[in-house]
Length: 206
Image (cartoon, rainbow, N blue to C red; front, side):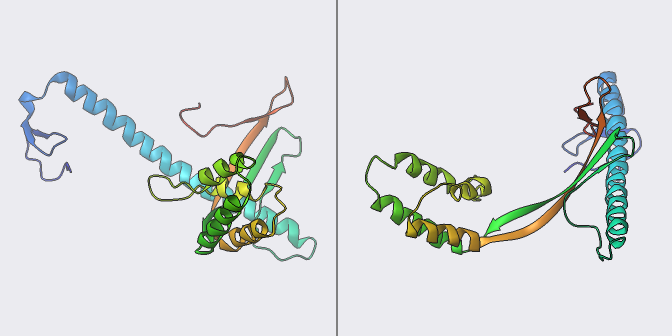
C-alpha cells in the first residue's frame, strides 16, 4: 500500500509506492492530485461532522423521549424504540428508527429439513410455486449468508400443515438479534402539497 511517509524532497510517491522525481510528474497529474486530495479531505471532515451530528441528534431525541415519559411516571432511557416527532407548527418532522439485524441459529437447519419433508410429501405439481419459494428462501449469497427477508416470508404463507407449522416455529426459535442500528431522518413539509419531503444528508442526493 502506498504511503506518504519518509518521501525525500523533490520526489512524489505514486499509487504503487514508487518514488518519482517531481520533474517527471506531469502538471495535469499534479493538478488532479491536488483536486482529489483537497476534496477528499473536505469530504472526510464533513463525514466526521455528520457523524457527530447524528450522535448529538440521537442523544437529543433520547433525552426528549425520556423527559416526555417521565411526565407520566415512566422511567426510560429513551434510547430504544421507533418514534416520530413534529415541530409545533408542523413544518418539520423527525423520525428515529431502531433496526434490528436478525440472524438465524442452528434451529434453522431443523426448519429446513421439516420444510423439505413437507414439500416432498405434498402432491407433485400442486405445490411447485411453494417449492420454488422454499429453494429461493434458503439460497445463500456469496458470503454464505441466508437472506433474512426471504426466510421470514415463508412464515406469511397460509399453509395448514402441522409439519409446516412446526417448521415455522423452528424458524421463529432460530431468530436472534445480532445488533441494532439506529437511524434518524429529517423531513420538511412542502407548502405546495403538504407532503413531508426528506431533508437529504446524502451528498449524492443533494
